[in-house]
Length: 118
Length: 113
Image (cartoon, rainbow over all chains, first blue to last red; front, top):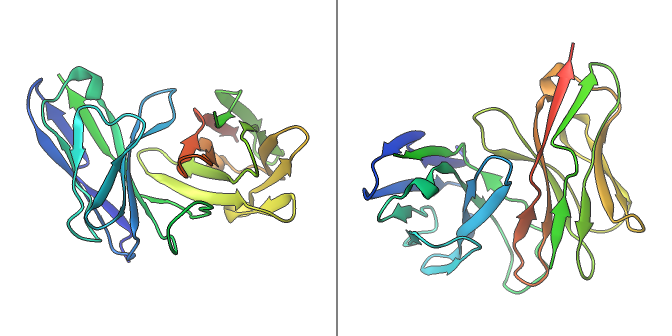
């Protein structure tokens, strides 16, 4: 298993440009997540998905969009890039049996995409 | 609100000495606590988690963590540090309201030869 893969590894955007960060997992996990990591700030959840066709906002969703058409893929879209979106982006996945609270799942992370917006 | 705090931005330790990376938490109800490690230019890797049971949890690479309910702490420990343990360590807690992980700001561990 490759686990969680992300492309590209690095990208430089100009203000106002758009791009899609790709994330794929081959572990048949139902939950997938997008985080951003800023220096000294830990990880902040952008969006997450509990299964194909279902997505929801996390802590910092503004400026981003997601879709989940398959179990394996969870792309993150930046429509109008801004300097505030300069960050390292991590995708993660986990498996949960059933819905509801009480999650004890372990999240598995991809290697990250380093994005700079100039 | 649920939260975790990592009070040290950096911890320095000599190789072969014991290491401790501190984490305190604030949750309502029973805490589900996690430790992750991030090596340079890599994603986060799961080390260990506490759900219930024994207060001492053993994880990957010889690490362990001690859950202390009275002190609301979940410190990461290792009896003998290696230079290869040098990395960024994150503590996380499950938010009981949203069921999501809340991460601390991270502690950089530097092990010197």
